[in-house]
Image 1 (cartoon, rainbow, N blue to C red):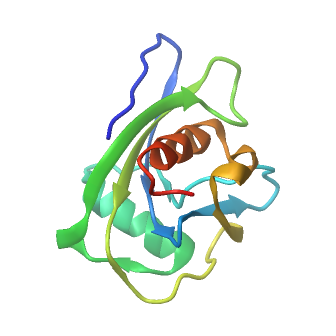
Image 2 (cartoon, rainbow, N blue to C red):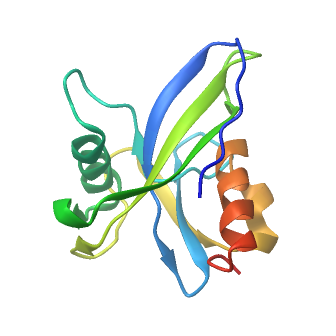
Image 3 (tube, one colour):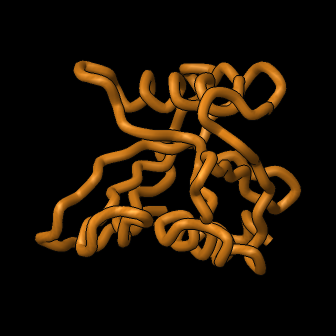
Length: 140
């Protein structure tokens, strides 16, 4: 699965961990933000996609992704939420098996398991991913 749109607007390059349980997508919300995102963020200098998504998952939801199971499932480019008008986000979405218990950590205030019907609770790029996952029968 892959969905990318192009634009000349400023683009935030980000990575995210995609984890679905019982037809619902794990989403997180930081303090002071109204919509849910995926666990993830920006890569640090010299960091690979796999290392960045593993670090972000550990920092935000306390799990350790198994490096040999990390796989990119989609790249979404969409309007960036809570950014300057015209800013877009390019979100590289990865799945992976993990060790540990999912729990909020660091700047994360809340987590939620979001289904297709609740997708409006999410930032635009996450809504687009939910629609793609719903079309393939992964998110219900």
